[in-house]
Length: 344
Image (cartoon, rainbow, N blue to C red; front, side, top):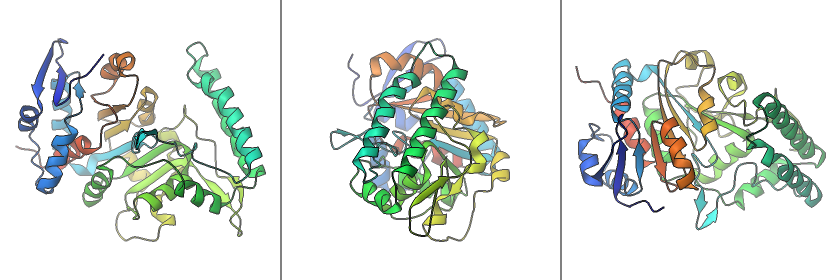
């Protein structure tokens, strides 16, 4: 199935499909981007040349109005990392995950971790394994992988080199989104079943700056004075438990990038922010808000591949779906709208 460029497909609550031109869709938006330049607005229009799917326009608009009325002090952003903040494809090649890019500098242990992947990865997506049993399998997989990293003598130098040689890049517009949210004192929780130390190094090498409002909820390593991995902090965070229950394991990105003044993401204050903008690339990412007593949640899904088969479930589950490895400019537009003062 082919999807037309330069259109935005919107499905009404009655599930009747209407197609608008990109320019008509942008003109209909109430967000005015007062804080961005003309060049940024042009990039947003270019992003809309990729197909955007909204299943229930009225419901989405009601959520936008509710979040704007409540104000930015009630808003937080929860985002998956791999293939959500980062691109699915980089220069024509499949982008690597934060776990997949890691090379220990020990071929034997790299091969052992790959063997674990080949065994457990199909189990992760099995439709016949009960969730409780699958969660145990995922914890087993992650635990074995972490032990191999320790036994194989992983060093922080190997992490730096792995990131430097990796095929990984942030989506266009991610930096601008983070800047906007930082200016508005809106916390960002980056959830990942990967490794926090690698994600921090990706931020360092690919963005070259820190954000005082960003925390990473992921598996954290402990290194000795020689930079060698000796253990992991806390409980294992895997694909089936990366949610608000893991928040106490979160660490601000800037802890390793140099101190910054201003907003720090306080766990107790974050839990009081009951309006959520959630970003993910997998239906399972919707579980990142589990454990949060939220009032209004807008969910955005990035459907990067296998569109024909996955679009029906994505459009029913997410408020907005971006197709074809879209950039983050559409989210920047929405965030700017959410941060605008409500019209009385």
